[in-house]
Length: 189
Image (tube, rainbow, N blue to C red; front, side):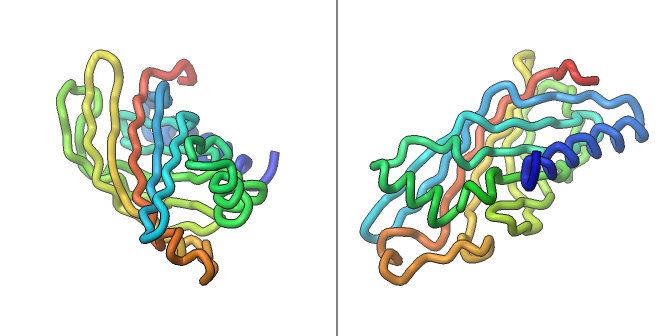
């Protein structure tokens, strides 16, 4: 295990350790996910999605870690789009995952059923570059678990992803990302 996978495991273990020091942790794990993106450029629209996100959320302390394997994105318009995305832009052999680790800012009781508008603040890492982000989310707590949905933009240049001049009309400088995660009780307590 190396690179992003080792960092992900380290972050998860650190979250479990810190949560254990603060009090009894109540961990929820991603049970179901869909993460999609759209690049809407003048000459081409690129869309893809992944159902392979993993992560944990400590509902007592509101800390979280979410990982999305870059190779899990599918649904491109063509095999060439997928290949260019993997090889030329996100360089998924080197940078295997995107990672978002942080905390829900609002002091919301995540065990109480209801619908909440919250903000997730943390470090978003993609293509080996980390940026501090605050992402507004809708959170629904119900008997089926805790569902988090949100939308945000990713500026490719902020993550060291260069767009060659020859394809600037086919690839947007910003990708719109949609996240839909369902967390449920985890057996790792």
